Image: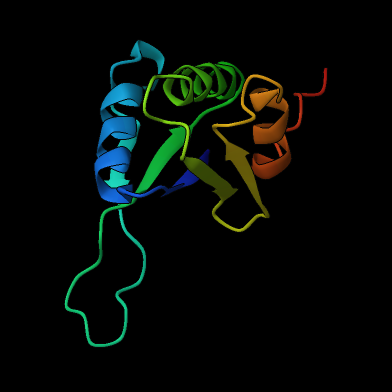
Length: 122
């Protein structure tokens, strides 16, 4: 199973990460697969801000559901200054900008970052 790691870049990243976590956790297909996390503590700091959301993805549908949820969350009022950086644990990162989300295919962008490949017929 892959994990999508979503970093929230905004004027209030911790609050927005909490909001995104709540939003994604409300989706039945993602329930129990979403958690709020943080990065590595900065030098001289004892803790880290919880400004990252991790989503455990299985095969098939969850990526489509995640893309739909992210698009809906980003298009909510007050989200115009938000950017999401999405990556796989060991993969490249892609950026989803709320200002351009209506013109971008969020699912295609997520597939680039998470390198989901369609299952091959047996």
